[in-house]
Length: 186
Image (cartoon, rainbow, N blue to C red; front, side):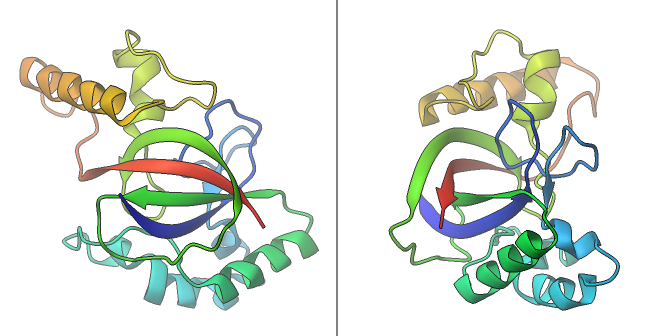
């Protein structure tokens, strides 16, 4: 897998520790949360749009992951979050997608597991949103993710079989990507 970069995620007190960051509630994470802060969003959103979130604006571009490979931007982002007393966490993302590439410094990190999610900014996760409701036969690790690549591949195959025998749009459609995730500490 290719190390793509880092996603900054607002901390949430949720047992799921994956890439899905589409939430705005207290129990759900939010990716790139400073982009929604009215008084400073311009400071972060323009860079995000040009360098990280390109997949959001060009949905035909399935060759990018919405992760950051610029440590100066990451440091600026977390410094602002700390100034505002916003708890955050940093996810190191690895996928089979080739862009962006990140020369990963030797961070202290914890392996979280494998997720199956959109490549774009909020990273809707099929694992988080489907396993408890449609595929309870699959066992997830303590972070709400698959422990191995083999396990997530079994889930993807079961998901494809499910789609063949159920009405269209029973499951979320889209270009999902397998993520190998680590939480990192600077």
